[in-house]
Image 1: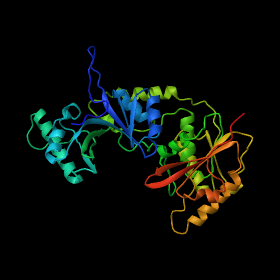
Image 2: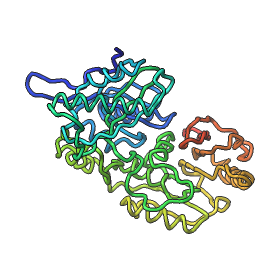
Image 3: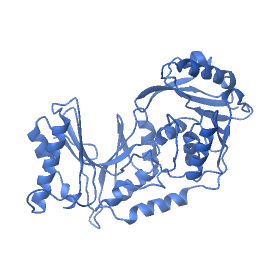
Image 4: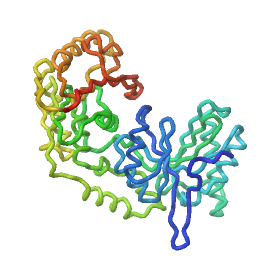
Length: 394
């Protein structure tokens, strides 16, 4: 049997019982270091793998991670992990786990199955056998016969088999963490909120610097910048799956949100601007910022890239997610925009400029060579984050 990192989901002290869970945060490929840093900043030790960051904590850790993580997708509890090369091994391994410590008798527990590079490659069979094993375990513990009613609260479960190692998890998040709750409208190809936050966190911006997004669309990048700059937890406005879990104390989430409100610096003045050529997108961006409580914090304005003049006497940061030109006939238009960006922003030596695009020939159109390129995935699209660093201050 393979033991995972931080093995031992539930521990007890002599004075009082403190539930300690092995937790797993998932994120887009390439963002692991950012999420790991966020988890360390929350006060937890972490260990990082591809698309995953492991850490350990109690009920409050579950709530804090969901409320505070800007770049992650989900926070999961790892119930157990073991090697399974046959369906019998899978069934017995799942049944041996302490499901009764998590699931009440009436729990609804949908099971999702995934299998990658494993002998048990049929995901429907993996899912069905896992479900049956959990039912058998609960029926044995609760002394029930036949099917379980599953009329109670929902506990989303996943069985993931990677290279013959099965990992059983409970999703504490529900809808992905990128769904902050403020975006009531969007454009054709909006960035996910957590990906936008990651783009900002990969820059050298800090709250006393001006920030500009010249192709703002629905305003996600400036909004995420403002949330970060004001230290506003991204999960303040939303609900989570763990709120319905029997083993989670109801007051935990409210306590964490109260602490997050106390930590926010609502009075801090920020210089954040978002521009777009489309006046309808500016209206959408303003509505989204208002919904986020940032209507007076961010300035949005209809403005074409070619007409945008920034003050090079300031040291600022520019982040842009321009059109990629992925559709037939659109690449020429996108590269025309890139050339305009190069003409307007290329010589801003006091500004750090960060531009995300799937066009790997971007530098030719922009007319300048990037200081650094970072490979990221915007959903399933391979993109490069072209970074043009400002000259150092003297």
